[in-house]
Image (cartoon, rainbow, N blue to C red; front, side):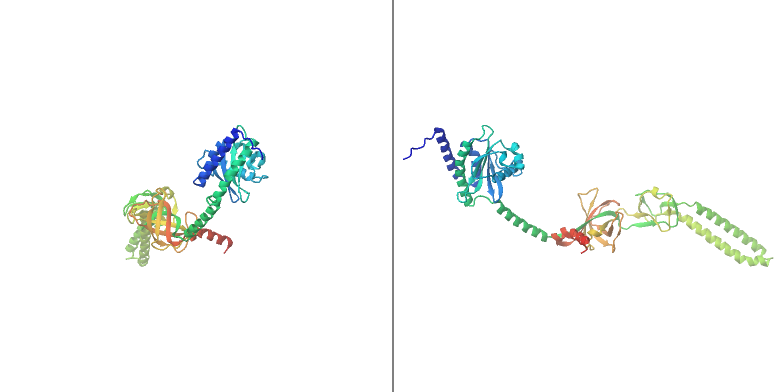
Amino acid sequence: MKKPVDISPKAAERLAVLVQLERMARRCAGFKEFGFFVVNETVRFMPYDRAVFWRLDGEDVRIEAVSAVPAPDEEAPFIFWMKRAIARCLKMKSPEKSRLVTAADVSGDAAQGWEDFCTPSALWVPFVSPVTRSVEGGLWLTRKAPAFDASEAGAAELAAEAYGDIFSAWKAAGKVPVFKRRLRKARLTLGAVLILAALFPVRMAAVAPAEVVPAAPRFVTAPMSGVVKSFAVGAGQPVKAGDLLFSFDDTELRARLRLADKALAAAGEEYKKAAQLSFSSPESKARLPLIRLEIEKAKDERAHFAELAERSNVRAPVGGTAIFSDASDWIGKPVSLGEKVLTLADPEKTALRISLPIADAIDVVKGADVSFFMYAVPETPVRAKVESVSFGAENVPEGFLAYRVKAAFSENGGFRIGTRGIAKIYGGRVPFLYYALRRPFAALRRWFGI
């Protein structure tokens, strides 16, 4: 019969602590409680500064618990480094044995961060499955002083066996969360949500620049060809019917009118002289009809120049607000007959002019809803309704081809003429997938010529 091995009181005390820890670990109510217990209570069996409980989820390393931390942050740099270091240690020779590991046992980026996140040596305590004899998880223990020695690695082997059996029991019972399974379920759920979102009907809409314009403008054009001499009104000034708007340079007209007056007076004198001589001179009597024609011609020329002189002062045909850029842009500028000079409009009767780019053109019908966001007040939309859409696209001042859309405001209010902003025109309802991919598909068609 072999003689019993003598065990020192200190070793017996440590074994008693290990047995007590094993019993307490088996009584944990859940897997999270087990992980929290392992990293925080094992210090009673083997002193350490930090303990990390990790496990394998397929081929991925997951950090379940860190001592003195309620829950590890997956985005923390230390957690990222621990995953890389553990993955390197799993490739060591005989990773199922407890041992001391250093920076030499890992390589690459894990070795580079060793000094920042770990002590010179760490204690590798793997949990080995009693069935497959493969590593399923483990502990990573670090201590600054005194450093771990080889004898403590042997003692850690006992704790590894006890905790490994409990860990395997939790895993066999299906209590260990499987991240990939949850991820697969989340992907399926996300896919279903995306499909439903793609088929969800939304209102088709297009965004385009817009400007507040007069609802019923009255254009004032040049009644004659000439040079603008002066403006009697300023831009944005209210005027009444008959008020003087602007004047042409009438110097030449006044000179021609004086010449016409002189020609008319000379023809009149010549007629009087010929009439007096007509009683005695048949020749003078014969010239009377020709002189009458010259008088009529002189009258017509005089009336023509008088009318032009009157036209040189352009007056407002109706009341309203004078809309033009600036008087200095017109003074001294030659204009042609019929050329638009300014606009008269009622400031209380306004409409919305929208330049819808051909690239964003949707099916716009009369009565479609429009939301107008003024640059000055972008947070408050103004409602409007489409009244008309131009048949063809044309070049607009913004520098692109666009359809002209005119909309009437649904709200009564004096919107300042010339106010600019962004208009959102709404069309019919389409699936969200079509709404989101309409422009990319159109670009691909233009690119590949489909």
